[in-house]
Length: 221
View 1 (cartoon, one colour):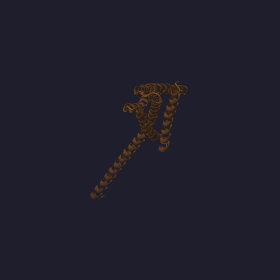
View 2 (tube, one colour):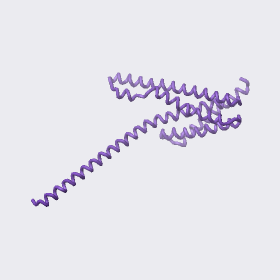
View 3 (cartoon, rainbow, N blue to C red):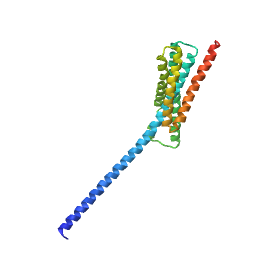
View 4 (cartoon, rainbow, N blue to C red):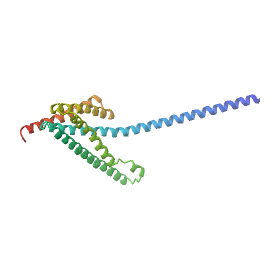
């Protein structure tokens, strides 16, 4: 065989090997990016569940505190009474949610551990992946407090009693729409319908509390 042809053939083989190597590297990088994308989706799903729970907790704190403040505002014009009632509602709702979440998550952990014992599984990695009752309790309390701050800040910004009774529901309405939109978005639910349900529910709670307290207060009970 002629030397020139041999060199040409070797060159072609080297180029082919290099091309295959680059192709394999590109495929490996593509697979890694795909796996990272899948992990990101998985992490997003987990984060979405926590965020949705936080939004619901904030919504509960918002409605509970606002309803209490509107109830007191129906019979008392003193802003201090409304603020103290709102603060008491914030603390009570945060503690209630935290304790309830702690007990609920702890019960879930006990059930899962008991099931693993029955199946004779002993995997430390799986135990570490179990939800934390303390973390869940803290997150719930914080979410409730965030929602409850909205009507408190709205009441503090107004001195006139009648104006305050309008400003508080207005601020709560805006917050309800935002929380309803976030909850629907994270839960992949129809945004308009879910937001409307949250808004009407909040209005109903404030209206009922205000009306019944006004009725009872007007009769001197």
